[in-house]
Image (cartoon, rainbow, N blue to C red; front, side):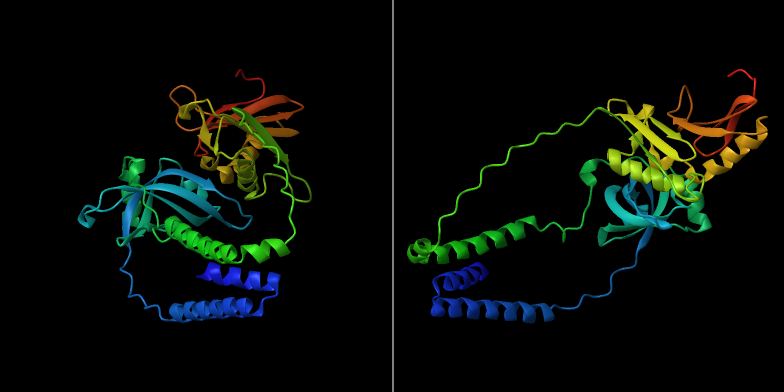
Length: 344
């Protein structure tokens, strides 16, 4: 009906036919009035049930940007409700703002406390400050990944079929009116040339990638609080993936490299790195490895080797005395020191 009314208005304007224009405009006004009145008569919903706490496994996470202290992060979770809830574990995707200071605590395959609504299992949020009891359960818990078939989402958002039906009805009404006036309408209208088809474009995705960025300006050192993680998020958005094979950080430059053919054990997640601890490790390397006048420093982060767990962090410092380095694990714990002149 709406499509027919709009088409009647357009046809009336083109043909300068006042009755057709008035009829279409009147029907359109009535439809708008009915829609407004119908919207005001929606029944109010009752109080939603209280949320329940549960443990969840972080399958994946990705910070989507932002320069403030709280950044939006997309999580893919396996929620494991309590046994008394009578619901099996399921997958869900959420987006939640997380403070930069707290972000290192959330890593792939880690455990977090979440709150969800039993009547709307897709309505999940991470509890950033759980109670001591739940914190203890997080440390002891082991949760298996739920299959992808258990993924739940908000059904109110999935309205594709309804939108398609409305669109078809809209077009049918418009076509009906145009067909009724096709004779005078096409006689009055000028023929328009069909624009030539634009050439198709093809794109391909490289199997390997390397990108870098340089920061400049006052107080632009990557050692400034929050600067490393913000720069990492910028590079992640460029390469469109969070899994990389190497990260290099210097005073004013950060670079990432990756290879999509590598297995997961030979890559690491950009957001799993302890960026907030790296400036302290750099200062420690510059002052404790026997270099009195350090000139440059460099952080190289690579996947684990051998039986290692998590990526390996190596901080190399150079000066007039030579080169020294300090190794740390993914939690920022120093595991090796090699001063000037010591063998690697």
